Image (cartoon, rainbow, N blue to C red; front, top):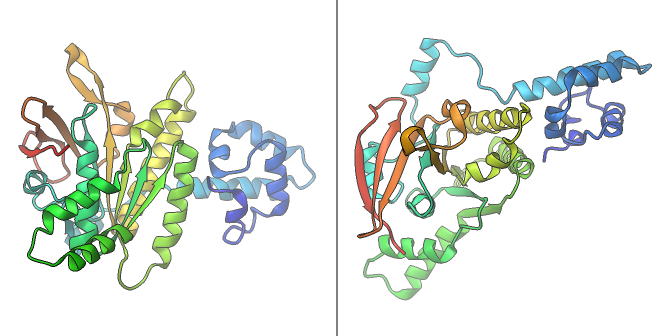
Length: 320
């Protein structure tokens, strides 16, 4: 979680007095602020002797939340942004790379959708090992389901390192790959905000080699689904905030983001991506996986792409 105290150096109105006011109402973090009724909060502030200063703090906190949303850009801005040198990162899956014209594009959020055991985690692990080895950049891997497997990453590194090196050289390659993958276990949406805010600080200050090139969240739906129950809007607000923060990180720091999402039953029993219509606008690219368990072949098709037609399909092999 992002504590209010961490905002004090950058936002003068979020000082110790404002923080004490928030703590008295059970507000310790930006996420707590999102969950609190804004009208009630303003009403409580107006009852205090220093009401104007407290309302300034509320306004600055709102600016923090608004900062998670991508700013308006005109057509020329978008065209210039598209012309920038945005690298394409290989996923290590030949079928997916061919389908996407090379792989994951920096500055974009790509979502892998599929039922359980359809190959979503394998794509994440292969992409992590590929970027950490071929591009010599670091990968941040947010694991929400205890699915990260260093043994499987090692096996993927072995597949692409099947060269006549001695064992010492192969061990050094594996060591470099593993040291370039930073794994965080996250099991609730508030811990997710905390990791993302830490990453944002890291991205602002990173220089030189071994910069973060890829962020993976496996799976995003495991964190968001539990907060969407009931008729309240707080869960949807948190979902949109984490989605916009991910896109903000991708756009402002030119990194590729890969997330996974599960499927639910749709009309006529046809599977569809979970998280509903509200989340649908977040990913730049959505890929649907389906697995033929008879021969371990996984089919992948485009269901949304910012610059390609949907419906294109390819396949790759499931290992293990």
